[in-house]
Image (cartoon, rainbow over all chains, first blue to last red; front, side, top):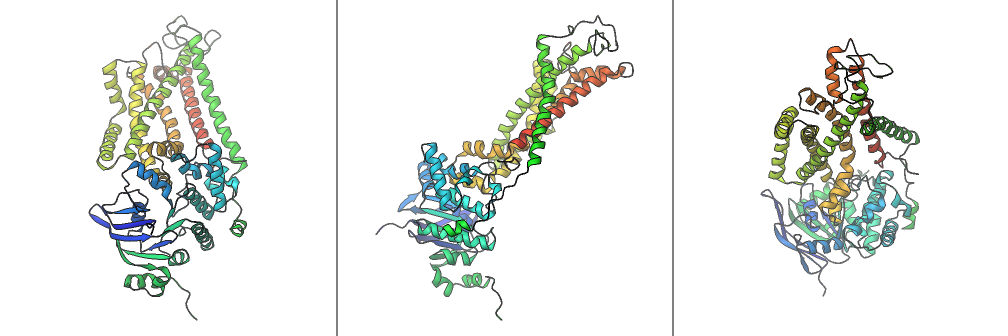
Length: 254
Length: 290
């Protein structure tokens, strides 16, 4: 029995006496993508920041591969950067407009000293760009030359270039138009088939249903329901989950 | 996957040939204007038409073969004074911009990174500095170290640093709140890397244009300091003091009032054009990429 990829135990985070998260516990097994849903302000983004080690939890802890992770320990944090990477909501603000795509995508390699030679960096950047479906000459260009969907691909390339095991995505498609959305979800699901486990935060249940084996519902900083996505969506137990489902826009029946 | 690639829309290239050419012209004109003043200033180190103390030309002489720009009310050659003034203007402008720029950027960045009470404290200090009149700062510095060009530069630079620091702080705070900074942290980049790779390149366009503006203001501020006897001591007249001396005789000898003003305008416009040009050359969203 191997340890789960990620185990979150009684996680709590208090910001200025306001608890943003309380007693959040869940596990993520390798290859079992997790969707985190909830309204704005439910604590989704805080949870992601804790998972990424950008903030230290007030209570509880996170185990990665069975090892406790302390975001205050520099060496542990550095290891964590190669374990978990992130994709953000807005591809217009997540790419530095003054760096070309090659520099953007190679940032984890340079900052974490993962590649020793310039040619190794270029090779790894090129293969990451290929993996996200961008042409190799994209490395020479600047973010403003790309569309929203393409920019999100660049962000995903940056996230996968250090070969992480966990990809944490914060509303990765909500800033994109519908047809682009589908392609980015397809890209994420193809990456997860390739061995990456994805934790995706979304208030779009469609994205979660398409991508995630398991789903967790957050309401005001607490986990109100979690389970296999199909079961959860088919028979929501908690009233809050039913409310979320009812809020999904549908075409009227004729 | 391959079907996905094929269906990608073509990469849009936002670029425009004509604007690219116009911007390089901006930089070029600016370099020429600043270059004229710079060459004049450099010449003053090796050659001057007359000694600055030479009063043999007669008072307020009109332009002639011997004195191309005439003489001032003490009989000194005006061209000589203007050439020395070019040197002083560049020294004051460059000196105070370097001083104010370095101190201002460091303070502003520190303040942007600082948390809560430290940020509040630094902001309060900057507000006090900005509220403090430059002339008062200058008088304090001069009282401490005597009237010289150096103390004028120090005073102007210190006053400028508060303005630059506040601008830097607000610009850097905005950049630090953006997702690409979070992404850089997740990528393992620590704060020195954040500053050098992300914050400075992104705030630089605004800062450099502001510094060019401050350059012009510094040259003008030195003129006021000279007027109060707090600037460059005679016989090394700055353009500002030539202007002020020529005020009373503008109807008899207008060139003394016009020439330094024109040179001042040429220098300030030149520096601003160079700054605009530098900003645009460094901006990938405006540059045409072949």
